[in-house]
Length: 375
Picture (tube, rainbow, N blue to C red):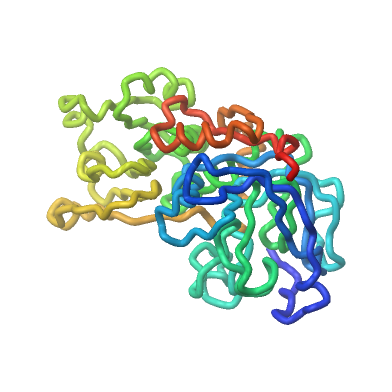
């Protein structure tokens, strides 16, 4: 894919202009602090896409940012990095989208576009830091005035550089597409990197919540044998219905021992603090365990099980813009969508509290952005 040259970092005629939109924002580091708010976005530049946000998925990361678990949040904070909507305006250099097209935006809205990773369209690993869709700071001049916090999708209008605007097929359901922009790409990227898109791999998905659900569905659609791994016995029937061939209950020591060495890859989506070795022991020689869930405490693992088996432990963070477009095309063509529950904005606080505890319902919650309150 190619994109037009990026906009100059000094473009006052564009950067200084703003668009005011409605938002539902956390006013403090409390999940109960959401209020109607107005926020400003930069006006449409030559390389920008403007769209009405129809739906925005709710992610467990939103809990971390609202509560300032990572120590980087500023308030008011408008979360949301699973945006789906319809294009209302485009800049004169925009070539891949037109007014009326369906569009999505995921977890980032800018990066340096000059480093090794950006040149490979792996902007999430930008050497000087990608700009998050919300809770980030505009740095490179394409996500609003430099030094201004970015504003997420719990709102009704978005302005974004074309590179970060993902084209959505016309017949795709936007409410189900929205969570793909985070959960979908988060699971798709490491599966593709490990060769699962060719089929035939034995894939373990640890943690059967909103992320795990997408991991099962995508890996199964790729033609892999999927083992769902959970601490909850009540996840078995749902896991099998989503495409898992096998189910492992972590508290069943005999079953875990029998499954040792049986998997090529384990994607660990667990966001609560936990031990890694029960999952790593399931890997075959030269198998790979990928950390995906964001935890707040460090892990401790012995070296010997990895040294003597060539197993590897790595992390994975969402995916770049090219891979995200590839994921949308794959999922929409195969009808791979999350199980969702659409909610009004007034239920956001209750949903975030549920996610803070545990997503036992195996569902992705999605805000109907037509219900964003007006201040």
